[in-house]
Image (tube, rainbow, N blue to C red; front, side, top):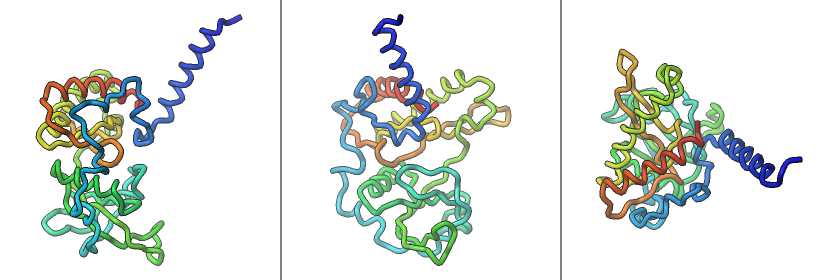
Length: 251
């Protein structure tokens, strides 16, 4: 006969397994449900979709975009967008290969906040309304708020040869480079990225299949926060805890 404590322990383990296997993408996770409320730091402000938005921020989709021709639809999609697309031709001073077009579900504070965060880190190119065909049927096209952003090079870690060669070492190396980027954004740009989903990270490898560079992606709600005055040491300490708690839920 098993003890009550043993049964509770088994149920706890099963609940962790269920959460971890279901938690993709992490945008569906409630950050407040983590063991330690890591977002309740005195230097972390409201999300980028909240009170930091000014009237100009709410006008980023008012214009109708001209000269934007959508190409192939990309497989990636988040919780608050309807799809990511390549471009079929260059746009203004940008090559088509340098741009990703993100179609938002709504023209609302979540979309406005994402534009503002992208501007802060230098990834924003343009935004506005665009006729987007539903399911490839142009007769069903409707005006959609879209964001044109810089296309980040590389691929997600699980799609690279280094992942199968040694995942533990690769994650250790990725963490060091991602940490530096997140700290710099927080201190210099006042943008805190907290959604450490493995699929929100791109890595670039050298010709010898060694890690060259790391890029943290996804500036959409609810994982991006404003930052008050803070030093690098405090952000570094927060990053270590957030990475330890959050990343395993996405592996």
